[in-house]
Length: 110
Image 1 (cartoon, rainbow, N blue to C red):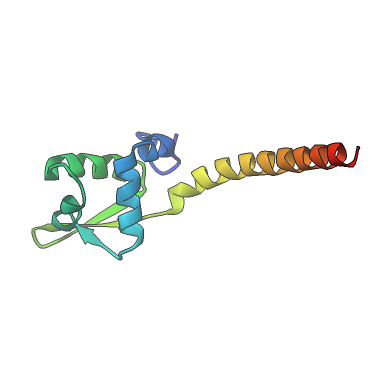
Image 2 (cartoon, rainbow, N blue to C red):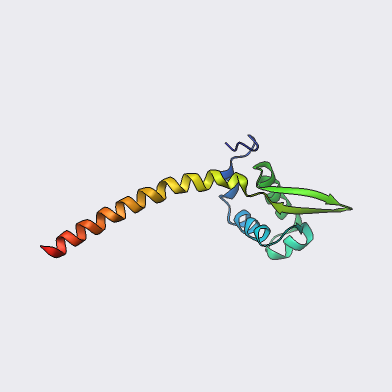
């Protein structure tokens, strides 16, 4: 579970392609209101809002009210959990690729 909010797991939150796209869009901007995010997707405002709620529950997205508008921004710190998990397997693959390379080199020399 996410340390930010025990209601939503960070891995669950980023499992959906739409939510990963929202994260990407937010990473490219300071803040984005819902009415500017919605046209980026082939779904309605309510569906985009539901995706944002899942990301907010995981702590990945923060929001603030500006008048009648809600603006969203990325909080990338919960993604550190994903980075740490992937880093472990990156080391695993580097080690295995090194071993495979050694094996292939030995076979070529024979």
